Length: 225
Image 1: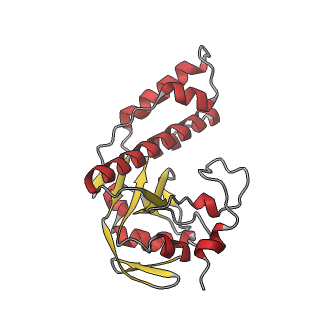
Image 2: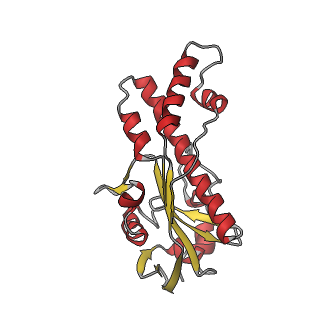
């Protein structure tokens, strides 16, 4: 399923705050112009599948014939049979626009605007899934977010999704990173207990942290017998 009619309406006040630009600054007009340019071309997109678990082992799970290796993923998916693998992106249009900017400060602004477009794509995707499938309480796992589910798991995820480059312009590089760079991939699943990969990540001062690190969680819930 492809979502390619996602509106992009960045909040200028939020953007000014994030970029630490004061109202009345001469930079405000420059930023407004960039936002207007970005809105004119932005096409954030998302791609997802409704997939089903076929078999499980201690450290692997088979989803629609594709094998994923992760003890944490196995445990998190143990109560469910249906999952939603996905890719969301700011879109190749914004990627090209941002890469055409030479000024370092404005390139940073363009990067932040592109991140906001990616957020629009992910929010639209999750809202669509909630309305259409009513999965209830859910959590997400992303390849590369934990040593237990490393970045190489991007390959089976992209295989499960078919051809994301053809469908929404997202290409998996040999490095296992994605282009456009403002893209995200993962598996969303129903759960009774909230889960965030941050709970298992000890990295300090992470700007993307969504939950506190729990030093005992892996041993208590995920370590195999």
